Image 1 (cartoon, one colour):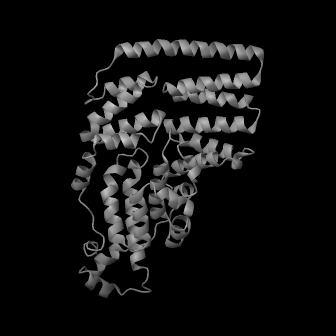
Image 2 (spheres, helix red, strand yellow):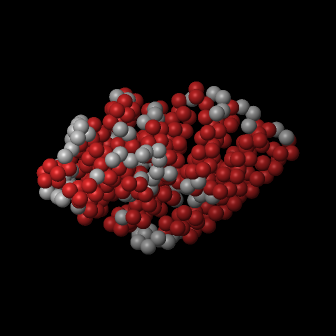
Length: 369
């Protein structure tokens, strides 16, 4: 049955996809990584190095260069120790940063102790927050999380609470602790005045969407991604870029939405359409799917696969997303028919009826969460 559909929905060979991935020039990688900031920039480069051998040396070179602009010596040393890294570790730089970091930590802890003595709540809150920022910059997210959570008892305004929640959400994403992300997004959304800040709302929706994506709840993820406003800008570049939101949202929507929901929430959604303009490939894939140009849509997806496999949020879900999108394409292709004679259908596709019946389950829509 699927052999008969090969002309309708062609697939590119995996080897060709791999070759396309390995041809990415250095300038393109630097342009790609420039959309991110902080720890995410380094981890994405490290992820590329881990999963694409032909890009390993270049990704590690850029990552080491970027790491030297910060104070995360542990990650710097980890990068330098990675097999294939073309840069030798600079022990003098590590020692220098360690000494400065130690002095900075002593100063922050001394200041916090002084603030606690003064009993000024705002000073104590800022002391814990500064310590959290320090540990986050060093890559110690578990300690940073504890520091941020300790500010909760000293928050005196809604703005303070929202700031605390967002800090916890960011470090929790870096830790891969999406239970914390979900809990603190909910806490932020229930805080007075949260809805009046468009940027914060966009950031929280991205965090919620990533949590749903991590749990493979593609419909929930899609609904959150497509609700993200353009006000997000570069304000969440420590986690993901606006073009990521467009790509993730498009893929999840194609995998989970029915035709009516795709039309209403994506195609007719002017705000999300403007985001899709930042990722032309995703925009064209959505338009092809919605216009029933399934061959073009799925061929474009296969062309895009190598890059998606180098994305730290998408890689674990690429195969399932693609399977769901392909299944929906098949369902929508046959949906105009009220009834199908299996014998005639089997004859048309040159397969036995029994074989065709076994192929029927993929044609039934999956229950999306």
